[in-house]
Structure formats: C-alpha cells, structure tokens
Image (cartoon, rainbow, N blue to C red; front, top):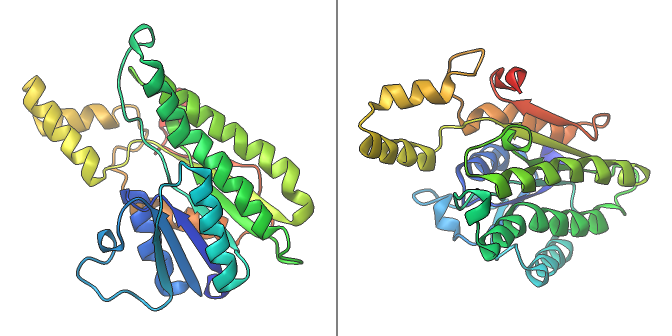
Length: 256
C-alpha cells in the first residue's frame, strides 16, 4: 500500500516528475523529491504538504547523491520506492558534428546519474527485510527508435533500459523490483513550446505539426504525463514484476 511507503522522486523539474509527485503526495506516507529546481515549481500557489520534502541538489554529481540518501536515511531510516525521471536530449547534431563535451553531458544526465542513483538506492533498500523495495526509471521510446539528430540521447536511454535488466537480475536476492517506463511523445509545456517554435520556423500550422507527432500511433490521441500515473502506481507497489520496460507509446512501438 502506498499509504505506508517512503518514496523518492528524482528530476521533478520536468513535467513527468512534477505530475508523479503531485499524484503520490496525497496517497503516500512520505514523498521526497530532488532536482536542481526549487520547491516552488511544484507548489507555487499551494501550501506545502507536511508529508512532502524537496531537496534541491544537482544529481549528476555523486557527492550530492550520497548526501541525498544520507538525509533520507537520517529522517526516515529507510526508502521503499525510488522513481527516477531525470533526462533530456539537450542538443541536436549529426554524429560527425557532435562535440564530445555535449555527448558526455547527455550521457551524464541520462545514464550516469541513473546508475549512481540506483547504486545508492540499492544500498539503502537492501536492508528492508522482508519488504524489499521498488525502483522505477522513466526511460524513453528513443531507447528503441531512431530520433533525428539525437544519437547520444537514444544511446543513453538504450543503456538505461539495459541497466534496468542488469540491476533487476542482481537485486532479486534483496527482494527489490526494478522496472522502466518508456513513453513516446508526451505533451508537456516544454514540448508545446517546441511545437510553437516549429510552427514559426516552418510555417506549418500547429494542427499539422501535432498530426505529424501522432502519425505512427495506432490510437490518434495526445499523451500527457498524467497518463503514466496508473503504471507508476502499479510498479511502485508490485511484488512480482521486475526487469521489465513498459512501452507507453499509444501503439507506436509496433512500428519499430
């Protein structure tokens, strides 16, 4: 039951992490979030709930990750669920034009941070006998499909999908379940801004651009962060699902 869980959500500066936290706080024991952004990005106009704590840290640095898990251990003595939503494609270039520093930054944000967070989450969860814990990574459909000029992002997300498999195979002895969620195109405020920019650059209507985003989906509907919440809730409480990567692409995955 989520009402008994201590939950950590990383990367809440983005719309998916924001949506997950807003959903989990009313139904969970305690929720901790962490990102570079301040707490006001989540509860700008509302009173901060008593069971919610935000810790602003750059989670691409291991020293900050160590600090985060130390704070959780000191305050709660355990961690039941870890949900990682950190990610971003950041740059767009062809392979022959990609600066090494940008390639490395994308790997650091999308894969290395996930590895480090998972490593320290396991260390805190492995003593949760006999309940274990649940780890969820938000991956991306880019882990399987080719996205134009986004090679480092796709490579990092493919690595993250494989990380889920490896971690799940190792931590079963602690009764820790590890799974991934790979969404397709999600309509977030940032993506809506991208569509507006594309409209100005191409002269195409917003309707035409949105249709092009949805054209490979088997069901022609927009997907929003809130559409992932039932699956997040399932994977936060499951005792029997591990090592899986759920493709949430409204059927687009059938074209890969």
